[in-house]
Image (tube, rainbow, N blue to C red; front, side):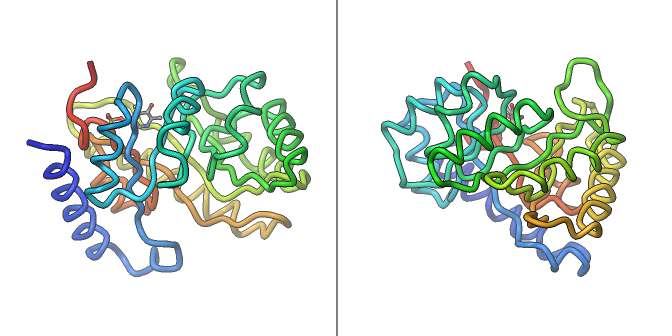
Length: 231
Ligand SMILES: *Cc1c(COP(=O)(O)O)cnc(C)c1O
């Protein structure tokens, strides 16, 4: 199937799932599909944009910078990968939302780089809900403290949380992970910290997005489900 077709079908499925979910998620913005463009050529990215994708997500700085040079402001740019402090300043000029803030040193670097550009950088905290050693992210127990720290910085704005669920056979097994992140998100939101706008929950990928949407996700990150298997 072409990127055009897979994208159209995916957007239709997401639309149906969003409409079916419980009313209490309607306080948050609707579900946005991020096309994860790692290892994809700019031509593939353009095809996804033509098929109705409105935002793209990169997980490597070098690749993001290179593709941005081609595609520029035709779309909204998200950064979803592990971020080294020495690379922060390369993405701040064009990044709409950074999903992977997981330590204070990184937050300070983002705040400094954004301040030099007179920008307030929107970010999510990456939480390692499953606790797998192989995953980046803060332990859930440190999330509140980190949220308070982010609220104290002026050129960074906390907008929500992100997690990556374990890879499992049966996607149903991811439900408790997503549900826990939603509760944590609600808890942080209820603190009403200054300089925050808690409205995005980034969870769900090709293999588990239907469950994530049912549990409150409104940013889903789809690679294979749009572009096919990565080479
Ligand atoms: C690669 C990647 C995705 C997309 O994975 P698919 O299974 O191809 O949809 C989502 N989130 C992150 C952080 C990724 O690195």
